[in-house]
Length: 299
Picture 1 (cartoon, rainbow, N blue to C red):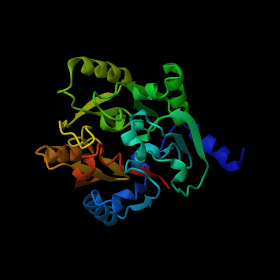
Picture 2: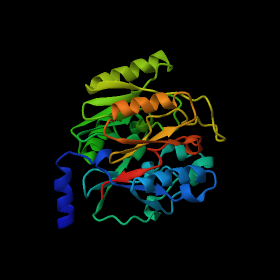
Picture 3: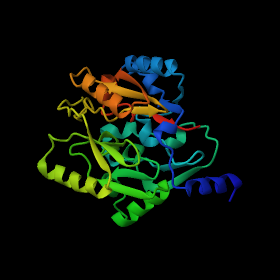
């Protein structure tokens, strides 16, 4: 084993993942800047990144803008874990052109990248320092393995002390956790206000959340009935899918009455952060928001 790989293993063994507050660099798909339908959003985002002095880079060779999903998960200062990106929701013929081959995305990283044999999108990993949350979608994506084996393997790859599994949100195209929950800290979890969901599913979610032992903080959520041209629900109203780079938070706005309510809530929850609202309908229409469209790391 090389010295770099040894250092990687020793660092990961500490069981403390890199969290958003520690990141200082953000990668984004170059498609945000080059595709006409995203350009207004990109110009708004770029102005904020430039204003706050946040360094960023545009990833070439991507097939869609959701770089959170196909890029690796950072587990330590030097360590990246690359899961297999081959989600079942991209199997239909009309979606196949959106599958990014990560091997074709140039990435100048300063240490070895560990490759996992598990299928898992980065958007389905919601993490704190010592714990993480995924949805049950990870079981169906790795159905050749038992649930116990999958859970143990994910926990091992992320090197976390605790891994919690919650039910996927009904009718969600991707089945990702990052549109449902968010760690506020090691002990508190932001959870969408799913008061409009079906009683049976809410009971399943409540049981799963209770098993985490975390303090649950309800977060504003305005589920949209709107569908895009592919027949998929948009992410308009999914405020919890914000991006955070260091002490800067990029908060999605949608032109809804709830925008200002959410901003006030964020200022209450994150008093030490700089919060920038950013109108995000151009990307939300296609099923994701700011966390989905960013891959923030600590360099």
